Length: 297
Image (spheres, rainbow, N blue to C red):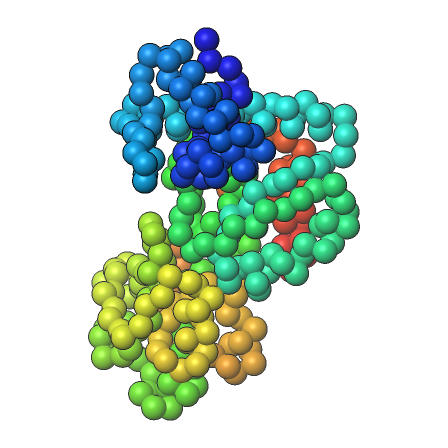
């Protein structure tokens, strides 16, 4: 029968790509790692890894087994953490996913107060503009825009929000301002190139109802922060999150365009997390802190 440590060794071998790297990570002898993998395969009666002198890859069965082992080990870690924290103050590592621009403009400024209030909490901030798979990637909580379709996730609203179109004065001086959404066809529109994002859907409301406008331009990037900087630099017209752009609109660094055509659907910013993590004190206090902080803003 396989042991729990065998599963841990298997997962580390896959994550690190070799027996030697996994051994270094686990502070074990490489031959001991190889022996544990062989014992694991013998105990369950299937080959999990294809091995050559130069490469290591998962078999089809091994791939499915890896995902199950990852989930099992995460559940065990969560159960241990929950039991340990039951009568203690919030502590331990909390993995948080959010966009780079949201982190720089909002989240990071809040962290000193959060960690001063909960000194035994450790944050692992993962910055990406992609929509991550929270469960399979081991994310405790993600900051996302818009309503969440996945019924297995819990969400708490942080900030009222809408998407707006804007450009820098420098761009408007050179190319003029669009009067209607259809005019965007004649402008350089900047796009976010991120996995599974809905932020490139430029929706507008006019006499014809709600409709999407296809836009084109000579620049796209996989970072919301870089996209915003490109708009500020006068490269083109962009569609951004209103709370993040308000200060620059008020200061005159950006010009708010096509206001009368804005789609008024709810695209609020939410904290999203798996339902089975809600009882963890470290997650609960973090989300409560965000809700409290943004309500004051």
